[in-house]
Image (cartoon, one colour):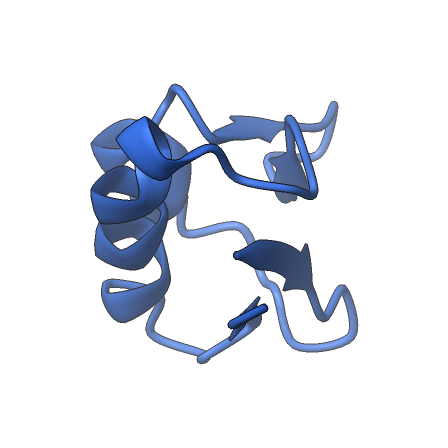
Amino acid sequence: MKVRVDLDRCVGHGRCYELAGSVFAEDDRGHCLVKRSTIPPELEVAARRGAENCPEDAIVIEEE
């Protein structure tokens, strides 16, 4: 699984890094950063939780 963020859509609500801090972080403006683009199996649930809770649907999950 790979994860990326559409920075044009992200407005910095912070739900992703609050719910899945092992996958996501915040930049200096509070927008989402992906800590690792390729997600290991043990973090897939966290990555999905962060993506599913993004109000702007700015997080894209790509299945490999």
